[in-house]
Image 1 (cartoon, rainbow, N blue to C red):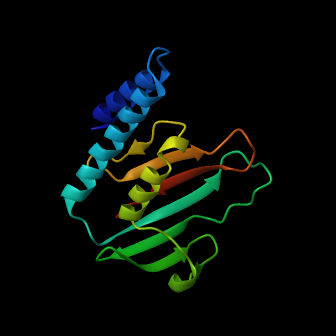
Image 2 (cartoon, rainbow, N blue to C red):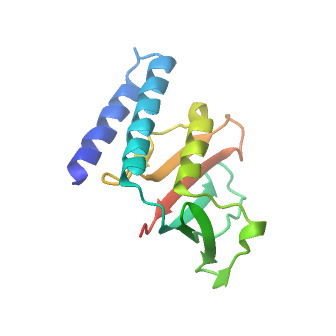
Length: 150
């Protein structure tokens, strides 16, 4: 099960790390990886699910990120936000937490800023982790981690 994920990740890593591959080629490989996993996600036709979402800065040592939130999605709409660490529910209308489909949109919108090969669930194709960094400046990088998918 994890063998395919390892082989896929290793293949992408090798393609990204080779010195003779242009930026356009590595971007094309990245887009293909994302589209392949998005296809798995769409083919699974899951519209109701729960997962834990954590967004943290990667290059801002003074940042104090908000704790992970459990997101409940019903019929492709966020219906509940719960922060276990704080023991509170968040107001859905006042907070912007994404569905898996919206996370895919975010990934494609930040494709040029993705700095490492994203990780995806082998079977369902939802993103597990991806990291962006807009520039060499501090406090513009971000790591998104999804876990506890039910």
